[in-house]
Length: 189
Image 1 (cartoon, one colour):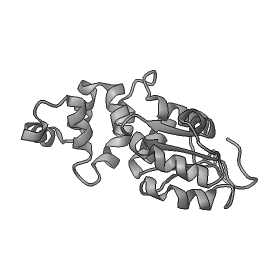
Image 2 (cartoon, rainbow, N blue to C red):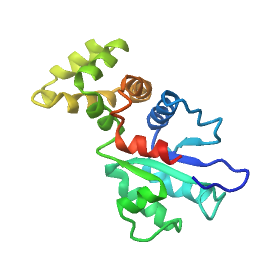
Image 3 (cartoon, rainbow, N blue to C red):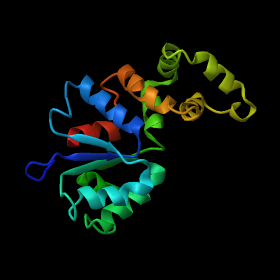
Image 4 (cartoon, rainbow, N blue to C red):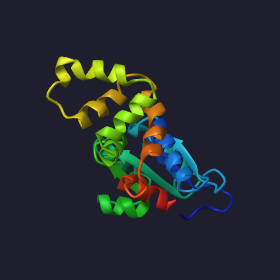
């Protein structure tokens, strides 16, 4: 990743759970992003991307940039990149070239699919939340849904659960099955 002299490259992610997952993967791969001068910055949701691109992008500090977003927020990231002067009518492939990667659904969905539900259940159990998950599964609106859908929603039902679970899910991954957006982002920086 190219960077301005003396300034650290910045990875813009939607939230703290994304930051934790990327940092956990880097650690598992033997990398220390902070020591390498890479900052992973949670932006507090996709609607804030423009403000962060104004600050860090070509009209601001002009540091090397990369990022990760959910599929539903791809448009926010695309528009932000275009407004920052980093392209026009960007395709997903062009966003990847810039270092911005899109998760199918969201990062939790990517991690759940990569791990499989048995491994996710073991993570939930290790966190002492298996009983809470079993209660959640029995709720009428979640009957008939797949375990992948249930786990994805379960991680978002309690404040802090996604953040607490992100690194645990990454720690449980077989490193040959890392979700492509997360793997590509780490390789980019």
